[in-house]
Length: 68
View 1 (cartoon, helix red, strand yellow):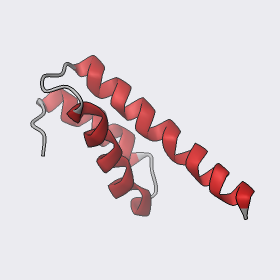
View 2 (view 1 turned 180 degrees about the vertical axis):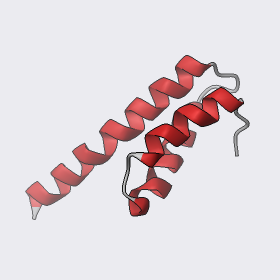
View 3 (view 1 turned 45 degrees about the horizontal axis):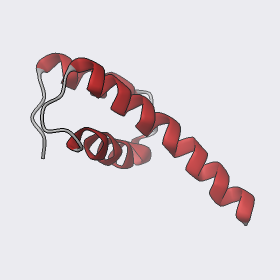
View 4 (view 1 turned 90 degrees about the horizontal axis):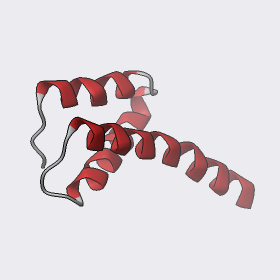
């Protein structure tokens, strides 16, 4: 579990809103995994974690489908 500011929550929520409902849980777990690396984080750290989580999902899906 992490603690975030109102603005950091807004950053994550806006990104999650763009995803299909079934992808949001995975997205949120990835964001948490990214920011957990450092104990203290700023808005820019949350923004970076959101970008990593968003870009990681399509790449993983593409790599899975290309091996089938």
